Length: 437
Image (cartoon, rainbow, N blue to C red; front, side):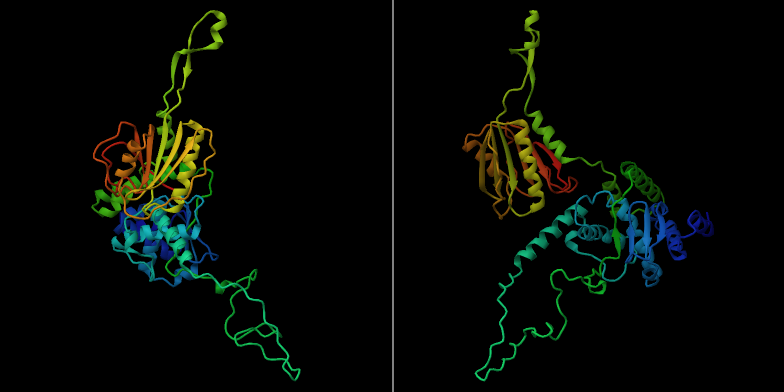
């Protein structure tokens, strides 16, 4: 197939495709077949209301004025950039997250891949070595944590003082207003004014992010599961086709494998794990009363009371506040559904920093996590023995970066890893689930 045939194929079926975008899609098909094959799946639409580019899993929109400001190589890089947003599932996974922060997190995740493929992106692109190799969810958590820390470090504004009124001088004339105070006559002073509460900010005064040249929009169609599955198949096929041509770099291959990995919902795994630790069986000790009047002595389903439900929260600071809050909510759900003898919540960095114990029938209110040192997983297991706990199970929320106990306990253990399992340290015992919040 020659170049002219590919150009005609890239432009057919969508007359509205801008010639420059069509040309760069063709170049991707020829030089970067992984990106090119996937780029042809997106409908291209001119959108003057957009700031730059956007993608929603089905359509790629662009602002024609912004397109005119780009070089051909930058157009090609942005098309590849938008393709990776969909290939990575960013359009399906935003959920209730802040759209702007989610967009930045997604950009940080894919921009290094685009650049390592030898493509060009506009100046000011969002790149940070700290985020290289991390998923968009991990980066979003880091950005959220950093934003909270900056907010806490900001000095508190001084308490508002009552406005000073002009005082008459001994001759009965008013004194001028103090320096840097607004005049009582017009309420203005020199220099630009900060917007007052309730005052609208003009569009040209809106803060902008010069490093973002595209917008990830969630897919709005009712067939999202079907569309997501179709893209996973397309990513797999594009990766195989590119690999056969010898044009699939290692980082792209790793990304494609990660993008099509089945998503395991950690909440379901947590509740299944807890339920399995609460065995139910038929017993003659409590006969089935429904058949006694017929003279049949049949066993009834009996669920014995389970022991202690023990949860450990990594308090070293490596697990973000948002994840801790969602984990606490699941702890309470397990407590109310299983009704264990006791609910025990421990915090641990290198040592146990807090222990909360709730009896059956309590209405627990879990306190915020306490700690902030390094990470080691040994002490909570020692504390179980020292305090005479009787765990039906133990669940440990952590990033898996710490020292594990040398000996496996006699009770089941679930490691809730905030690090993707492909990069997390392997626990020497127990079951591991990836926590994605």
